[in-house]
Image (tube, rainbow, N blue to C red; front, side, top):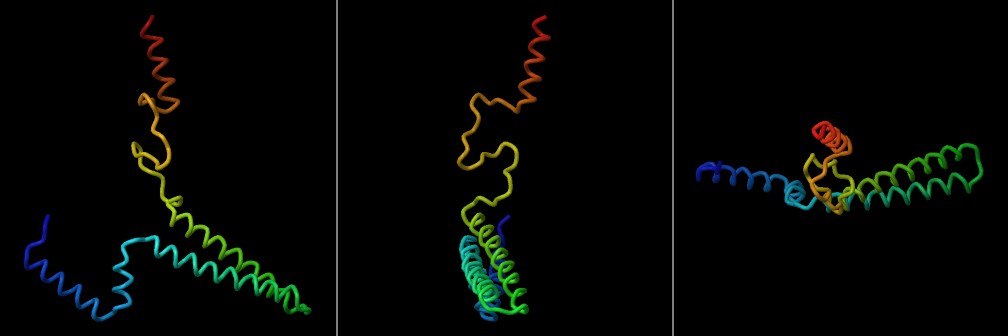
Length: 134
């Protein structure tokens, strides 16, 4: 249902007030492509990975029992950043989407030919045909 002219004017005024109040938030909201969000996360994950490598190397190379936890912590940071970056990369490229609803096609996958159902549906159909032939 479309908005009336009065409602549209009110909505525009509210939008302009929000943009004037917080331009940084307005810029974030204007971005319509979610891939840009995942690209930022990927850059942050790369920086975290580099920080983890540096911390791990400092903990391993320098002598001292107090620096061993620094090396372990660096490895944990490196691993977490790698996992975070991988999940962002997968979502950015469309691999992390939820499974499609029944009847919807999966991108890159060919639909079944002949409208065949699942394995159990085909077996039930064969069973019915056998009993109908008798």
